[in-house]
Image (tube, rainbow, N blue to C red; front, side):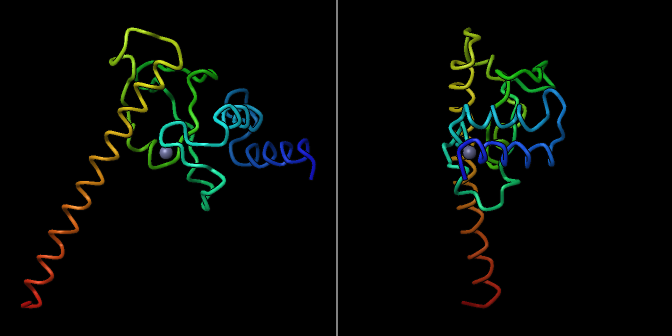
Length: 139
Ligand SMILES: [Zn+2]
């Protein structure tokens, strides 16, 4: 497979799944993902390594609910985990700068902080479950 064939294949798959509209279609999404060098722009996870490919998601850097648009610069290639962690966080609250790199840096810091926070909560929940199970079993 040549590089051109590989790109055409990805665009075809994106178009099948997201339609071919100006901002939702395959070529557009391919450009977003290629710009991100095929990695989640928050945690850096390589999308080549994601086995369930629907776990790649398109995030809006400035959330749509806060006035963010569908333009290329407002799109982020994200894994599902990071996109969920970002939620409706608006990176403009963290900086006076409005260029994509500055906003992305603020959003990335927020997402990674929330992921670490969530990891800790999962650990706490697992510990509590272990105690409850041990209690039930009379250990
Ligand atoms: Zn991620």
